Amino acid sequence: MSTISCLWAILSLINLSQSMQFHLRLQRNLLLPLALTTLALTSLPAKAQTTVYSPISLPASREVNDALSNSDIPTGTGGFARDYTVNLEAGDQVAVDVTSEEFDTLVILMNKDGVTVGENDDGPDGTTNSLLFARIGESGTYTVRVSAYAGQGAGNFYLKVARLREVQ
Image (cartoon, rainbow, N blue to C red; front, side):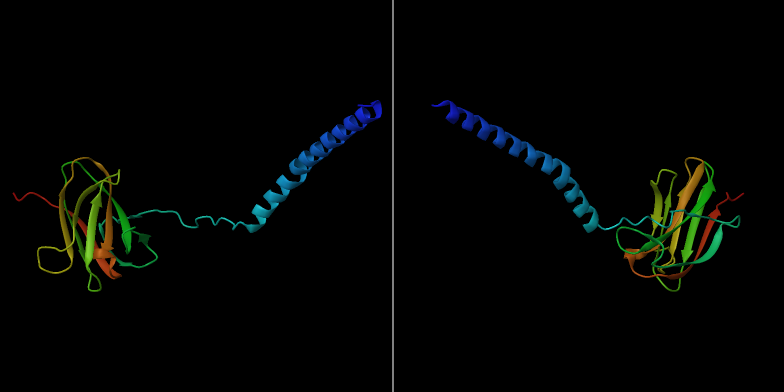
C-alpha cells in the first residue's frame, strides 16, 4: 500500500470517527430534549384533590338529622357513606339507631384504627332501619358510618348514639 493510500485510509477513519461523535452529540443535545418536550406537551396536567376527608363530630346530644347523597364518601362497593365521630369510654354499652323513610339504612361502628366493632342492616322491628348494639372495649374516638344497604339509595335520615344504662 502506498503512502498516499495509507494517508487516505487514515483520513477516512478520522472523518468516520468525527461523524459518529457528531451523531452522538446530536442525540444527547437535541433528541433527548426534543423527546422530553414532546412528552410534556402531550401529557395531561394532574388535578389536585380539592376536598379533605373529615368525619363530622356528633353534637353533645349525639343525635343528628342529615342527608346521604352522591357527594358523600364513595364506599368502594357502590354507593356513598357519611361518617360521624363520637368519643366513647371502655365499658360503655351503646345503641346506634339510624332511621330513614327514603332508603334502606346500614350502620357501621368502627374504632380509631378503622376496624369494624359492629354493623347492622335491619333492626329488630322488621323495618329497613338500623339498630346496632355494641359494648366498647377501649376508650377513644369511634366512627359511625351511615350508608345505604347494597349502595342503593340516598336521602334524609336520623342518627342517634345512646349510652345504655343498667336497670337498677
